[in-house]
Length: 222
Image (cartoon, rainbow, N blue to C red):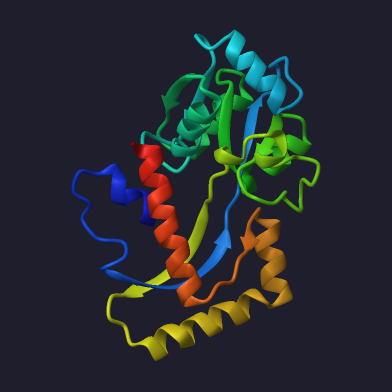
């Protein structure tokens, strides 16, 4: 994800994500789980939004830092809901999530791998997932679109790139090997167990996906 939002976060990015690289393959989606502190008087995302509106001057969300992959989806969430709640940046994902568990912060878009078990153990409220599909490990938690906020959906992903001008046969071979690996049950199951979503694409599909993601993130940053 840093590969796309870096292009608009900086006045002059140190590289061009499209011109300096060849997209090879997306490896996995990495959905975020929007969680709130357990003692918040809400049971779902709609109730949380109502709580935000009534308490917008005191509600806070945490992130792993300004301009991070946990800041941008919450900035988007603020924009879509038209409610400006306070951003509290932390130095890393661990402290940002820990203060939600401790009840000092109201909301955080946690990496699913870090938050699924916390939700199951009742240490946080699991409100929604950032991706287009529900998490297999928490099928009861709705997506943003399912609660009426399709424009708040945000992609997190891990992909493979090669240097610009890498010969096309090499790109295609690398893509075939990655896609074949993602179809191995043990590998796919491991990715799902870590809160991911195996997402094979051809190089051309990945290229189009990256271009779209750059444009989406530019709008959020703006």
